[in-house]
Length: 270
Image (tube, rainbow, N blue to C red; front, side):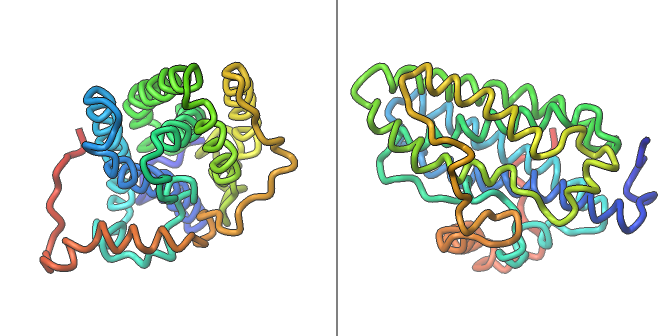
């Protein structure tokens, strides 16, 4: 089954494609906004440059998905700058502010997110919507680097005096990481139409099969998934923490102040 392009979609198909694209784009964009907060504050010059590059990658991935939404008739302003923040559907994991000065927080968050993102991209390789399938390879190649960066830092941090900080970050962030797999209104259609070849429940189990053994191998205790309650705000249904609205005001401030007719692109699709 192939859905061809935006012009050929039925209303049901369009709603499912839009939900899929907004989830992916919003996750990546907000993750990038948080990562850039570490510029010049990371513990080494190398890690500063690495996280800056990761943030740039995430913005580029968001651009890939927002561009497909523009093919469906949205403007960039409607996707980002002039959009009601209550309609964003990113996981609350990526919107949380970092614990002040806590590099372990940034690394644990990156690891939990990037493993999930890698699995999500793999489930889109054979997407029935060609514009999505055509862009997955680029994202996958960069997300693998992000995951390896986080894994390397986790091994380094847990082997020294930062072990307790990493443990605290795992306990704090793990429930929010589970919101990555919270379903949206059109999840059944996303799977039934073949937009994504695996359900969120399946991806959650695969994610647990990766992250739990790895974290435990570093002598970290991982909360029992079945005993963890999802946070009240999952993000996927438009419910967000107060921190999200503050972040939204920050990154839209310049656009609002300059009153631009069109946003200025700092990175293209390529």
